[in-house]
Length: 226
Image (cartoon, rainbow, N blue to C red; front, side):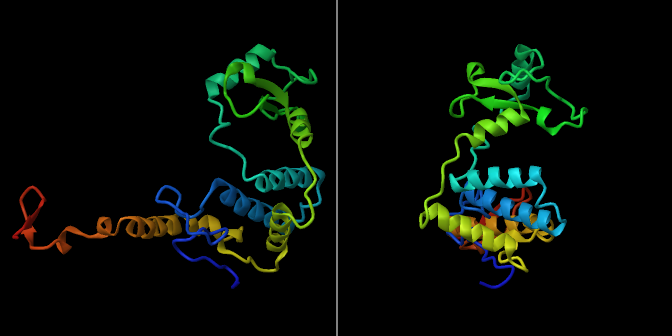
């Protein structure tokens, strides 16, 4: 694979062709999150932060999500009014350990940062939500980790991710923590047009290419002489 690899019309993370007009750069949320993870680790390594305990823990969490197929961000996005209702019900304290929650990162204690915990699944029903400090939220997630079986698909994926964030040069364009933020919008625009034409070739045909096109009306509609 060439450094900076990317083939327009395919998934920037896995080369799959199941990209869509809505998501023309990645074939799934899991692939998008895998690329985000690789860039996150590469940036942390470049800045010498990858051995910090909090960064190592964040990497562990994100790897677990990717190996599980991706974190269900859309389903678990809690509306702000509902978040505030949960925090009011909890009286500003963690509903797991009782710690006073930090809502503005004012205490300097990252473990006290206020989060919303889904008790079971991804339902945003009030009785399925709890106010947790960051430490309890992380501990709950870690309690659900399972060992990766050697030789499994998850083991292979973990090895591939490690190779990508350890490579001297980005193996894929989406791995490049420096370039990606500058190019993804234009790549997305071009890829969307390519996928749209692939899904519906006639949609990419301009009015001037229509059979019998002879000009435009004053209202801006095409004139066809058939």
